[in-house]
Amino acid sequence: MEFSIKAQPPEKIRCGCLVVSVSEERRLSPAAKALDQASSQHLSRVLRQGDLAGKTGKTLLLHGVPGLLAERVLLVHTGKSQKISGSEYLSVIRSMVQALDAINVKDAHLCLAEIPVQGHDNEWKLEQLVLAAREAAYRITRIADQQDPACSLERASLPLPEKMKVVAAQTLVARAQAIANGIYLARDLGNLPPNICTPTYLAEQARHMGKTWKFRVEVLEQAQMEKLGMGALLAVSAGSRQPPKLIVMNYQGAAKTDKPVVFVGKGITFDTGGVSLKPAPDMDEMKFDMCGAASVFGALRAVAEMKLPINVVGIVPTCENMPDGNATRPGDIVRSMSGQTIEILNTDAEGRLILCDALTYAERFEPDALIDVATLTGACVIALGNEAAGLYANDEKLGARLQAAGDHMIDRVWPMPLWEEYQEGLRSNFADMANVAGRAGGSITAACFLARFTRKWRWAHLDIAGVAYKGGKDKGATGRPVKLFCHYLMQRSGH
Image (cartoon, rainbow, N blue to C red; front, side, top):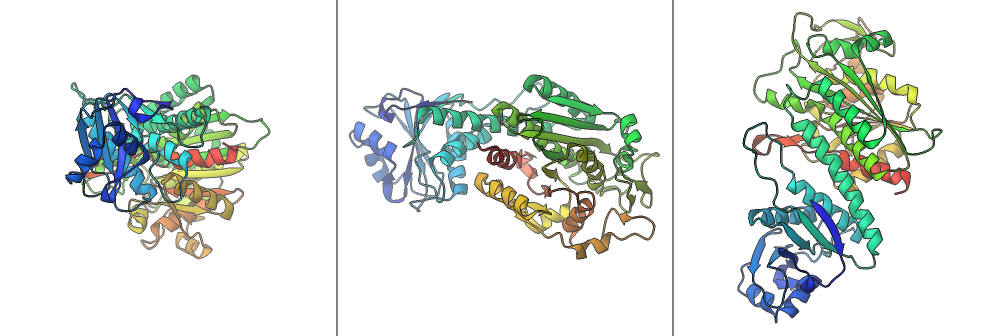
């Protein structure tokens, strides 16, 4: 979907559809008032009939409105409040895209950034308009002979917000498009079937992305990981015929002397649970166990497209977790790259095993901030549901910046404790630690496990098990938390 800025009055815009908003008691937005005046109060007469009463996001399509150059006008209801919440604003935009798609509109002029939104300015509204419209227009690529049609809306023009210059608005739209492209990449990777999206496939995509966006990519093979002593990561891949990979993507937008932000994304391309086999229902969703890796891919792509003046390293440990005669057993003890030994009590707690070696590997980059992201625990879903990811941080400032970035982008995280008392559950009689504690506080003890490998650095862990994908009839990857990461990096780089 292409976006452009047009500074003309809405009644002078020639397009397939003009989109304006109306709130409770037939209150017209400024653009809607302009259309009403140009059409000799046609909109007011229609609204008096009561066809647009109801909840936020309801739409009403008008054909052949007199005095306008547009073929149609779409009225979007914004509810009872004079100022709506950020979440309601995104809902309005999604409803608008669905309505336009239903009537096969190819080009539209969207006057929705003028809607008053609590706590947000025109820049935020314009950026989120682009992001939410792209989100609503996303279609899963089916592995089928007959594809579902793409969203009909191909081109959208946006009015120039008040007190904003055209160049600034165009720059903001281009930035939002880059973020949306990163989200699309993350969703595409997450939605692929596991027989296609293997560790080797992810490595190939990283190399292709590096060539396209001009950053360095290195892929470590099993022999190199063995030489480095990555016994934890290799214990997970032992039961799979797919060779493991450690993908390193290195974007340098600042001076070489500037310490990078390093992201580590869990890349389990399919998780059976290993010998600790998962129940059969919904096991197909375990293809989404690489969504942490996908979000790192998406963030790197967006950062490279935006050309942010910051150094960012993305590390993706990737493998399958499969049962096999060679698979790791409960009770096995492995030595991690850090030298610490781990008693594996449950082979389905595998994400932390591949992450701990990748986090140790990340030390060579001397990160200014080290952030890992993983669909790590079902316990996080029980704790926080499907709205917020779990946030753990050993540095208060880093945690606060990530939470603020999530709040700003409505890609929310919620802080969770990392108290030393939780470490007690990881005690082992036979090794330095066990890979699981008891059922209580499972997301917390998983984070505490990772904390043992990151004590030297400013570190944060995002457990995205509840937000990385949806199940049921809306099954598919969400692309979270690419928006959060992008805003965090933009804030750090001064953009």
